[in-house]
Length: 116
Image 1: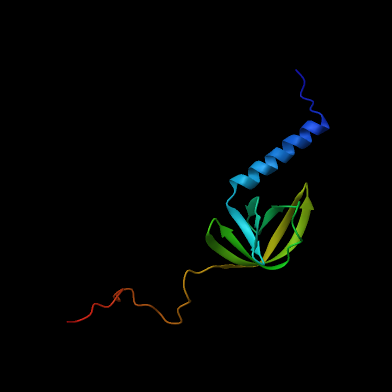
Image 2: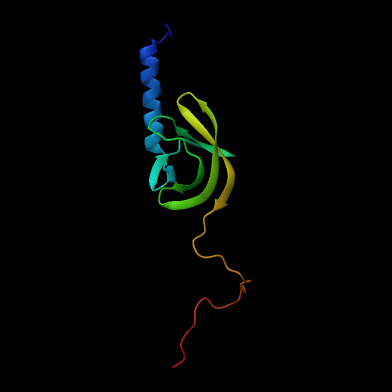
């Protein structure tokens, strides 16, 4: 049995693997209202497919499905094998509500009950 695959078959397998990765991932990066899929999320950045993507730079938002995870300042770091890696210069977690500028008492009531 031989393990040799022609160049066309190897290219076809690589393209199918890339398509499957794009479809299975929920992570995406939003830039100017346009979403781009994230192939891999790494410790200090993320990797996106190079095809049909502009060069990203600056402030972007990272989403997992509909949930906003981070607002990030990014810079391009490496291009390899049809993928582009970006590094975080700043990564700020997105909050559900406004930041509180006071300490909350843990025993405080969650709501007020009106007196009749």
